[in-house]
Structures are given as structure tokens and as C-alpha cells.
Image (cartoon, rainbow, N blue to C red):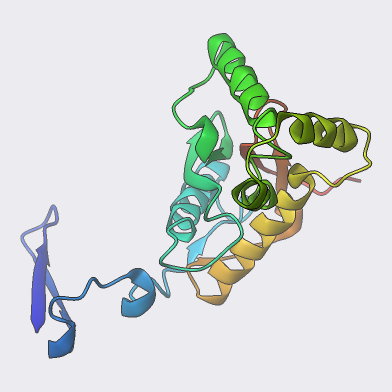
Length: 208
């Protein structure tokens, strides 16, 4: 099968490209991983080589590709569903907090959502918490005990692992040449105080 598509531009010229698929895949859903079409995009995400706005835009595009489960497998896929640029930062939105927006009332909503997750089970917003609840069922007592243990630094928090998961995802994106110029010292990676959203901020100069 041969699929053709024309892309329009502001000039009179038109560019055609075609994708050849085996006949037996005619009725099969073609995922990004199977097609291998999303490679060699080479989007620079360095806020020092580019303007921070361009770096953030390219980073958001790359992370939205990565969060598609059928492209590259990462520890973020099941938890984070969308990346967006807001107020000079990239935000990875946790699936349990999508749609709550920003501002005071959003913070109240996120606090309520966090409490509901706490009484659902231990660290319910994390991958490990989801797996524990699926195996043992919901438990308010276990959730509260786990919360106390995490706040006393007796147990590891999911928030502590997230920056490493983000680094791993970006390493894989760079290996597939979706992005270029990925340097850890050029980005600050943290999670929000309320909720589990990830924030990535450009670092334009190394600390003295």
C-alpha cells in the first residue's frame, strides 16, 4: 500500500512524500514504534544555544512524543499524560491533576485531590502505589502511615525518583535523535509542592 500526502506552504511549491507499508499491514494500526517514523527530528533543547522559548517549545514537543505509550517505554508513561509550557517553565501534568488549572482555587482542588489519593492507599499517585493498591486493595490506614513515613524521610518518595525518570526519558529521546543538545546542568527538574506535576526550568548560567 502506498499512502500519499501533500503539505501546503505559503509559496506556490508543493512537497509530496509517501510512506510504503507492507500489504499484510493494510488493516493494522501503525504505532510510532512500528513505523519508526519519529526519528531524526533533531530538535535542540538547549536554552543556552537557543532562546529559552525555543528550547521550551522543542522540549514540550519531545516530551509529548515520549508520553505516548506506543513510542518509547518510560517510567513516566502511566503517570504523566501531557507536557505544556507555562510561565517560562515546562510542566508535565500528572494524570490525577489534569484539568484543575492554575491559581488559588486550583491549589485547593489539588489539595483535596492529594488527600483523596492519600486515603486511597500508600503513595497512590506513584507507579508503586498503583501496583500496591491493585494487589492489596484500597487502605486509608496504610495510606496515612505511608504519608507520615515519607514526610519523616523514613520512606522514599515518588517525587525523589521523578527527576531521574525525566533524565532517563530525555536520554532515550536523544538516542533516537528526537532531541539534541540535552545537558542536565541546563535544566532544573522538580515537582510541585501540591500535586505531583513536574516542572522543568531553564538554567542559563552554571552556579559559581
